[in-house]
Amino acid sequence: MRKLAAAALSLLLCAAAGAQQADSTAPSIWSAAGEGDLDALAKFHAEGVSLDALDPNLGFTPLIATLATGQTTAAQWLLENGADPNARSGDGGTALQAAAFVGSAEIAEALLERGADPMARNDQGQNVWQILVLNWEATAAIAGMLNLPLERPAVEAGRARILELLQPHAAKAARSDVWFATVAGDLDAVKGHIEGGLDVNKRNPDSGAPLLVLAAIFDHRDIAAALFDAGADANARSYQNGATALHAAAFLGHADFVALLLENGADAGALSDDGGTALQAAQADWQTTQYIAAMLQVSVDEATTMPGKAKAAELLSAAASP
Image (tube, rainbow, N blue to C red; front, side, top):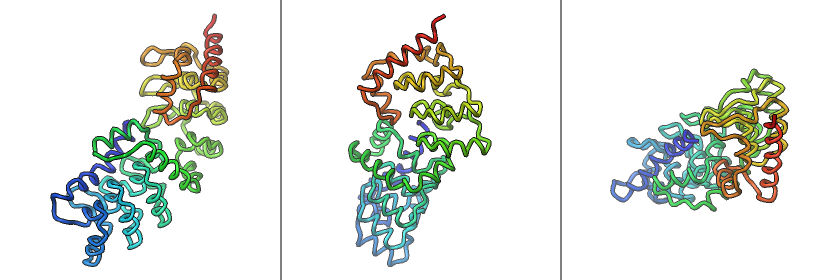
């Protein structure tokens, strides 16, 4: 998650800085885009200035400048007048990735209509889906550093709409990215990766979590079963905190997933790096569960999650008994 936050920060940092400097520097196509000044944009365009030009000092495109300041009309003007929807900033980021960060569904839709590539990756290797799942805490921290006036309801609603817009591209994403396939619950895609020689115990380069832990977080038991069939280790640990899939499933109240893990050799007594057991994770109160689930971008409901945690605790207590 820290790497994702850094990628999003890199994506918008230069554009925000350029927008904030607009009042104190000579007019440029980037300041015009950041201010939404269509007359100035038209003037620069008529003078032959490229609509995809990178700011010589900060390395952002006019399109990304519009996103840093919420200038939807200017972004649409740029696209209508020939700006490349796939033009990259100095760090390889695209306008679609920037739109995902700020939750600008209207601009994302315009970009996709003009051929923006949702599979494009920035220099850190992230695509638009990975930006979309950046949790609000990280988003708010980055927005605060950049003085971007983002509001959680608008950002989350915008990101949800962007996910809908990206749905036709999801199958392709799942085929190319096993992490996306696992989160999305695309069993066929995961099986395709396995058939292609996937290391089923590999860790995510960002979070350090094994695929099985990711499947546990989102309660995809069919994917876990496929991973086990391919030799997945039920006790594989996340590099970040030493937690296993059993910790994750127990914490989120996925009792059936806990049962599946125990059937496949998960150690009920395994300790995370802070010395916590899966049973202790299952016993965490609702407020703690809700808070951590929000950080993980997982939907939880007290009426179903807490009974699930109680059932998980029963299973773990039984498994730990001599």
